[in-house]
Structures are given as structure tokens and as C-alpha cells.
Image 1 (cartoon, one colour):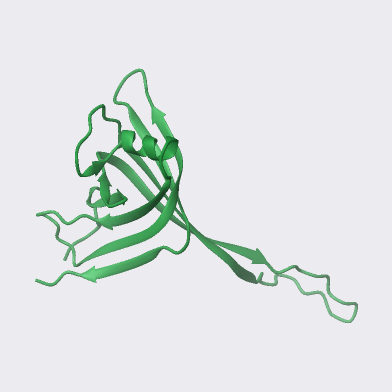
Image 2 (tube, rainbow, N blue to C red):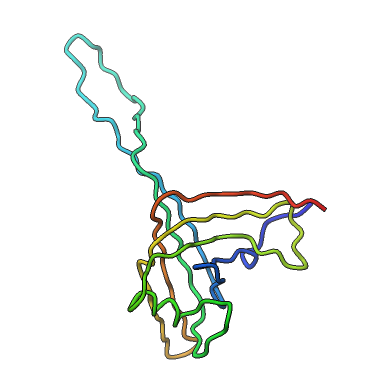
Length: 155
């Protein structure tokens, strides 16, 4: 039986193309809640301590953040730093995002999973350190619901 899924087997696609040379990706799903307002006990109530707080669900949000290596050349079929910058500067930053397991020849897991949603490119940071490779970071903020599908692998 397979164990922990390695991070290298999870990839992010933007508008149908994998992000080239991704080094890290994080999907964050958040629920926002409101706490019910507490009130003081009435004079007829005895002191009540340690009451539980009740939360009301307000909204749900999701974001995907990705770090990748920067390239000076283009490769067909993959999206890279130049493509992301062009979408933000002169194009439409609305994107289709996929966060999914990548099946390779050594993939030994019982299922694949897939998160999909429409989002907006909300940040792009180009990192140029004195030593080492140039990288970039991007963030996609969800616009609407995120879907999740887990598909068993049958042999």
C-alpha cells in the first residue's frame, strides 16, 4: 500500500497548462465565521462560566500560491513567468486553476485528486537574488466555488 504522497507529484495548471519548473505550491481553503454576541446574565440567572462560543458560517474562500524558477525562454505547452506577467500587465488576470496529482510511471497510489476553480491572479513577485536562480511567486485568489474530485485508479 502506498504511503505519503510526495509534493513533487502535485502540480498546478493555469488555463490548462502546467506551471513550468514549479518548486512549491500551496492550496489554502478558509472558512470565515462570525461569533454570536455574548450577553451578560440576567439578575435571575446564577453565574455561568465556561460557556461554549457558537459560530455562524459566513463565507468560504480559497487561494493557491506557487513558487517556480524563472526562465528566459518559452516552452510550448507550459506556462511560465513571462506568460503570468503578460496576463497581469496587458491581459486578463482571470484564470482557470487546477491543483492536482500528476500521474507518472512510478505513481503508486490508489487515487488521483483534482481541485478546480476560476480565480484571479492577485500577485506576482519576481525574485532576483545575488546568488542562485531567479524565481517568481504568484497567487491566485478564488472567484466562486472550488470543486474537488477524487478518482480511484483501477488496474
